[in-house]
Length: 450
Image (tube, rainbow, N blue to C red):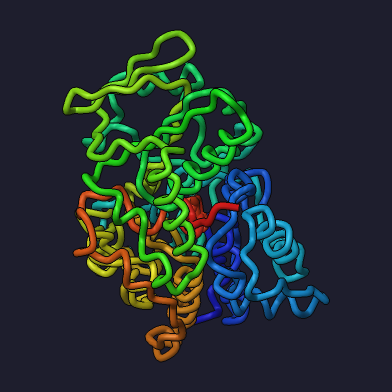
């Protein structure tokens, strides 16, 4: 099985992609990491100023740690809450610099298409034995192609944020607002990006939105004229407030408690049941209109409405996706945010993530599609199982080696199920991890305010 000379192509050199390479090497398989950005962890670098609410214990992969231990690397304190920048500097960069991985990472290499060599999507004969063909666009504008025995797509969702419009489409005027610089990239650093003295609107009900709201409220305390407005599609903010002291991730519980206090004190203006219908750009600001006729004038709009997977590059592969969340079909019901929080998603591996396209897997935040419930620890369990499956170890692939902290406070029944998200937006944050990747969420990663 391991005699195939072709590599396993891993798309994305974030936490899950690098961990995938470590597990593949332990299984005697040859990984090749393809990263669109100029360096590993490119998505996380975009939200490096954000602190995760999951401790280092849940953000390190076991196989990656085994590689690092051979270099004299000193692990971070397991109970500390890292910033995104620390995930990169203290974990990803040392991991990418190990002798085992250093020569197996290609940065500035964006995968723009994946198919089977010599076969289009409609051809079945010999499909499972044909190698994958990946077309790559390089930073200099050139393209190349390579063959792979298997493909793990861990590219996350950070670069495909969801629109502000309430119906799944960009609101009329949204493109103009973005072009005018009124809508920054997700998770901006509000202390450094010119938000002081302005009225800023945060759109979204996940943890990423909560972080932005609280950071802006803090900015307003020392900068007169700074105003904070927060709109959510749900009729109640109860789900965004979470479970407080009942949350098994204390930083996540504290986040909701602080958010409630900011709203009830008047530091933040909350508009619930606000479904964005139109944005009118006016000079250096905008008027945001809701479907029910309400409107609000603002200077800046921070999008925290989540992320979506970019499936365009996979159009020649035979995928089977959940119709609601765009995750692998068997995974969709397990991660539906109307029923699951980050901790209530059961551990899962290769069998759940498999597609009709043999030896192709979505992993990490991208495997969760539009669902915001992703944790890095879940991604690490995914790729541990995938590596075992690709190596032919069915027993290890089907084993479960993960226990997550279960909050139980953002499952359905506690609040209006039309909430924008339960556990953050991707990404991430982005984890990164999704939030991008993923951010732990990626779609934005799950975070706690600094």
